[in-house]
Length: 562
Image (cartoon, rainbow, N blue to C red; front, side, top):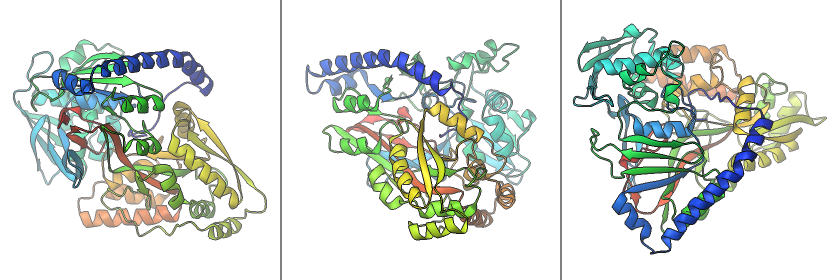
């Protein structure tokens, strides 16, 4: 889950399965019609796709997701984020730099920021006040100018409407009242924090802070819905490089370029995002050159990516990422409430065998609960390595080993790497005294059960949209992080270290605290370390301008054909 809070509402497993069965045939027929039409067009000439793209400049992509809402404050799906990252602008952006040895690919670097709606910024009041200087000449859909009052509205709305930002502003910036967002003049706004925050600029780069047209939103508000959250489920009202012109759930989403965007007109005039729920179909479309790329996380398994590496006309882009996958152990459920049992499990994980068999080179071994690209990461702390004898010894010390211990291992159905890894884990954990039952659940069911704390073992994933060790550590290990701390871990020393250093501006103190936190969490064996997944996409070979930012969602405005 990539969202700030990983809670996902959904129907029961039986209801979900019934709905899936009803829709599967229809969607399959839609796909076959789409594929057949695309392939027939390609038979006219071997260069039809390239010619059409140059004439119409349409980028056609496949994904496996639907938009839950277009409200920047409260979306949860990858589809929601992808669309908003292209139809809205945020005050700031994470700056990207070219990746050495990968022409046409750029990636974010820790601490590097560039202007968005705000052309520049500065700090005052001992760095406790962030001042944003708004770019002049921008127009809202209503025709009104973008100014500091417009930006204050998006910040006020984020703080007060349902969604993520009303949680993040108080936690990360210490902002609890709209009065702390102050318009200084027509094009200057200040954010007054009680103390400096190391994450202030990153906060302004989140797409949750998308610029909305206050008049459009207010015109669609009601007494029961003062922030027009219901209207924004299907509508957009902002400034961005593209505009949404079609949103047909279960079929496709179409974006069209804004000719007068402040960045200039994007290379591609149209972005067509086709809903293709079956991975085999997405692979087929790539091979037949009926689509230009596949977007979204986990929409192509590493095994299929590997199979496409040598495919003519396609290329694979893969760069390290902050996405973590781990064996989640519910520390409140026996026998996992015993630290020796959790340590034993860590020694029983054959991670060096799992990674090549499951990831095919598109990821690396996890050696800390902190991502390897995150400041403060330390790969020297963990003592764990595959050692069945050591694992058995710890199980005996914990009072287990004479009789098999039944335990459930939950995975999301269709997440191929997780399903494959679960089989490896089942085999090894049964060597040290467990009787493991692998339970496959739909995404919605998995998330509901995880949030309630009803899983024993599960394979989890997480990506911190802000690449900061304390952002990451808070949401995954602080006892108050309900819904995201899926290990239900509670350690007063950990809570204290996170709270004391969340806003610490002395870098050396902050990094020292991050190291101490890693030592405690690794010692407590809260996670069973698995892997960090690369950001990997398969696309047509002449597509360049690929930009990977910390949230990992594609920005189509930078893409073009070489």
